[in-house]
Amino acid sequence: MLPYLKKAVTNLFKKPSTEAFPAGDPPKAAEGYRGRIHYDPTKCMNCGMCLRVCAPQCMHRDIEKLENGDQKVTFTFDMTSCTFCAMCADFCSSHAITMTDDYMIVGTKLEDFLVTGTMIKKAPPKPKFTPEQIAEMKAKAEAAKKAKAEAAQNG
Amino acid sequence: MNVLLSSLFHVLIFPGLLFCVVMGVLLSGLDRIWVARMQRRVGPPLLQSWYDFLKCCGKETIVPRHAKKAVYFAAPVVGFAALISISLFLPIAGGKPAYSGTADLVVILYLLTLVSVCTIVGASASGSPFAGVGLSREMVAMISYELPFVLVILAVSRAILAPGDSLNNIFSLQAIADYQAANGPLITRWALIPAAIAMLFVIPCEVGMHPFDVAEAETEICEGTLAEYSGPPLAVFRLTHMVKMFIMTALFCVLFLGGITTGIAVLDVILFVLFCLILTFLTMSLPHGACARFKVEQVFKFYWTVVAGLAALSLILVWLGL
Amino acid sequence: MFEKLIDNSMAKSPWIFHINAGSCNGCDIELVSVLTPRYDAERLGFRLTGTPRQADIVVVSGPITLQTRDRLVRTLAQVPEPRVVVSLGSCPRSGNVFKGSYAIDGPLEKYTHVDVSVGGCTPKPEAIIAALAKATEILKEKRKEMHK
Image 1 (tube, rainbow over the protein chains, first blue to last red):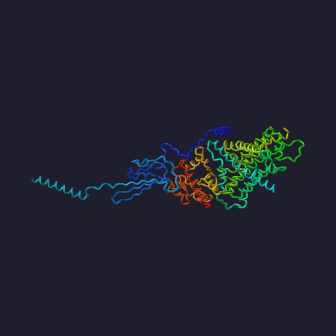
Image 2 (image 1 turned 90 degrees about the vertical axis):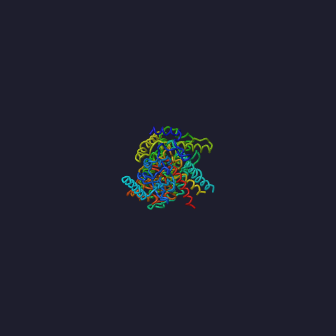
């Protein structure tokens, strides 16, 4: 007990080792800290890999079809469901998902915890000719070739 | 009329309710800050205990289904009243006590026991198994500190008794104060030093401070005796706990540090408060900062061997006339 | 005036009671670390009580397992008004990785109104302190509404 007593008395004259946090800015998180997810919709290509690897199924994808054939894709990440394993960030081949060091995930309602991003996925460009046209053209070319060959044989 | 007014003044203001509460809040606030500093923390504000008290007043009171309602509510109030009435017998700061009698030291002993008994009665009336465990522990703690406490009081009372003195003055705090005013504080008599040390050990256990708070172990038995209390009754219990810190340190000052006066009443009171602060630091903050909570049987063993031994040694020395 | 004094003290001495509803112990340890010298929540008046009767802020951690569900409901009923419920970590609000398990019966919103939530698995102590500070503000508001 005596060493503890000595320690207690010496501590009495030392400065407290408490952080000043609630007054002032929150301290920075350690390097490599996995905090709130950041989603960059401009990089995303809607491969859906993140949805497959997410263990707690914290993300949700809404696909809305637009009139011109494009797709409006909305990703929603629920931070009260996430385990911050960073699997989605690892598997994202286009680096659209990254983990920030923001750990202040505090709120009173659900909207405070959602990270969302919307992107338009362009429909693939329309081919110039339809398959029928191509077949017709092919047949035409074939016929022309045949005619040419026949002409050469006869001539 | 004058008697009534002065009684009211004594009971409500000095040295009664107001003075006791102010001192209790001051001592417990400083104790919490000191403990925090020993653990290298900043610690709560000085008035934290007062905020706790006010907050408890503003909470809803839930009476458990199995509780005996009348006893459940009466116990904290009776305990607090008993504690405040102790202060009326103490000759604070070399002055005269508000009331004095032949054997007021015995009355104080009984009133102090009554405070603990009220905790026990309140706990048993709340009908909770956790409170049951807590009250059995409180009883063991009471048994452990009462023996050395009584031995200390015997030693002090014997020490001031001159040969051929009448037995009228025995167990009288006024007589002890007068003796000390004439012959200097009792702590300077080396035969009484073991008794003073024993008394220093009795204080934290009597108050229920950290290493000896076996009855209110919040981590083991859910606050023990207070497990079912909420709202204003809890607030009164917390206040009782705070004021008890002051009463016990004041009792030590009266028993061992009397007779140190400057002649000016205000300075005397400040000196008295200073002694209380030092005693709070020595007996409550230091053990709290330095050691973890004892087990019940450890407390019992420690008090009946070491502390009671010290007190008995002092009693024997005094009896031999040293 | 007395009511106002009590209102102010309500924000200055919130006592915490912690319910573990099947947590993995990660959040529990982080909550206890809030009271350590480095974060020292006691300077804001926080105190960890051992009984729900004395609590102002109830902190729930863990997905609500079937075994803890009934105890959770009973314990929440024992907390006197005004009280604030804080959900700690991802589990109580959604079930986290245990989502869809036969053994859990969450989320916490099914049993009580959750005032403040902290996300994270586990949250950092700073985030917990921020959430508790927010909870004290709500506590004061609730107390004001009580005597209106």
